[in-house]
Amino acid sequence: MLLNSKQIVELCITNGFALAGIASAKESKYSTAFEKWISQGKQGEMEWMKRNVDVRLDPNQLLEGAQSVLCVADRYGNADKQNCREGHGKIARYAQGRDYHKVMKKRLHAVCDSLRDVFPNETFRACVDTAPIMEREFAERAGLGSIGKHTLLLEQGIGSWLLLGVIVTTAPLEETTSTTVDPCASCSRCIEACPTEALTPWELDARRCISYLTIEHRSEIDAEFYDKIGHWIFGCDICQDVCPHNQPTEKGECAALNPEYEPTLASLNIAEVIQWDEESRRNAFQGSSMKRAKLGMMRRNAVIVAGNILAIKDDAKLFELIKSIADQDEDEIVRLTAKQVLQLLTKI
Image (cartoon, rainbow, N blue to C red; front, side, top):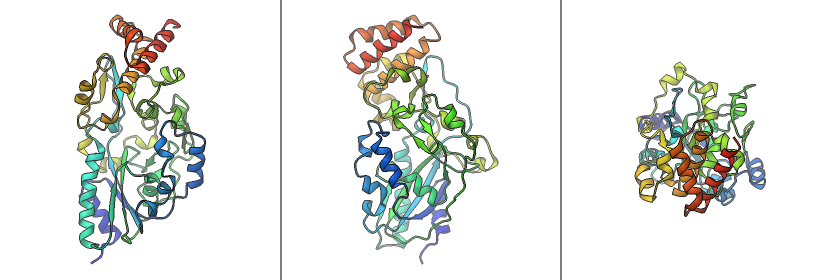
């Protein structure tokens, strides 16, 4: 017997996902907007976004004969405030626990296996932030929530602390009800709170985003962003922290947080990161999604955060550490960043 949408959603929930829904595998309605965004260079150094644009905009180019996209979400955070320890750099919440790619992929494959028993002649492809597909758009179509002005998917009462995964399939699955609610109305807190002015309503200029700068940007970071980066060493949660939908609600209490994302590493000692070698980086990021961050990037980020710490509090040891790096570090980008930090500190 074929499964209806309610049964498939229940299958996903049984496998530990907080939300699930099904959308048809139609072409993206954002093709014009996405192509314009790319043409304006707002993807920054993420050259991979310029590749396979046609595939990203049409699931049938990702999987021939695709008819349905099964969307799931894990909830990884809540409204609890996190205080950064002195001398430490902050890590975005999604990266504080186990690597979400592995956490989600295993359960997505389990869902695929169950569906293959019912649809033995169909193909299923599980994707977790690794394939060119518009996850947020399909999740919105599937009724998991609505895309907010901060460009993230949010479910009213639950919020936007969500990690998304999809299963693209040739199986003709029954669709779930989509939502057309504007979750933001006149609210613009995320736009106003963004220190780098990376956000306009429903659009992100990645070149100005702290998450992009500290995770995806591999070259030097423009000095205009140094003070705005604050204590963020990997990622940024500012637009989510201020979102009214991420405040405590009764509905939010019912959508369980996945324990796999419990913080095991919420911050990093800045002085230690600056002095890391490759082995130190690997050991610190074992089992974490942060393992993709290169050593030079993390040390560069740490130097910037160190400058922001020194701008408000004297720390002779940290200052001497930055000074020594500016003089002789073998990584050119780290060395140049340290020199720029010292120049800015002399102007204070």
